[in-house]
Image 1 (tube, rainbow, N blue to C red):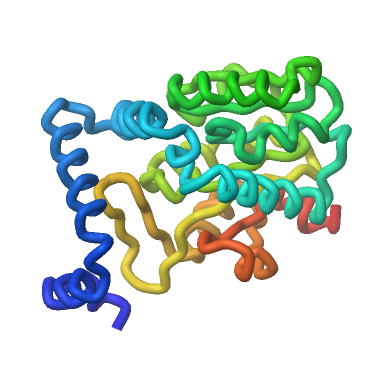
Image 2: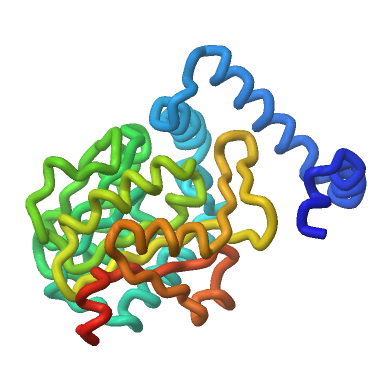
Length: 259
């Protein structure tokens, strides 16, 4: 049943039931075609162009929030979950795909001075993040923002972070990008620390939509994480809160010892 969505008849029926989604889909399809004809086929250059256009339209919508209220609510949801599950003010935190600091501004205000680092592949959204820091008067918290073009973290010292957070990042990444992250992120995660990430979960065929949205079976990512030395736990209590699913990764030897 899950694979019926790939049949043309299913797609036609879906479009007839949801006519309001046809125009946005066609706009994205046209954008996808233009980007690929312009040679933006690798993930970083492609998604930088997506973010450049989306930020120019509305920085809030560029990170998946349809309104200011939605932007604030989703940031609060991420922040509250981290605090409920062990985040302390003295932790050093890395936010992968920090965007315009939807959750980041709350983290910056909560953490001790200099304990927040946000990275993103989009220079345009990082400029919007600078604006958020100024608007929220968080400059004295000394947050650090960095532009990156991969997830090897080769410029980061060993065991640098207690908590690593990636919300709605791997939902937009092909599997080789996720594996690149898993292969390197363990080096910069402290013993006893954790890495929270969200993703689009599917029980059917893994797939992507217009090179922007990627869907994975949880067991695929769990197996991949284990291959790179992590214990990965599906966060059941996150499921009622958000449409994406969440995993928590810890170093396998620490998780196995009860640390």
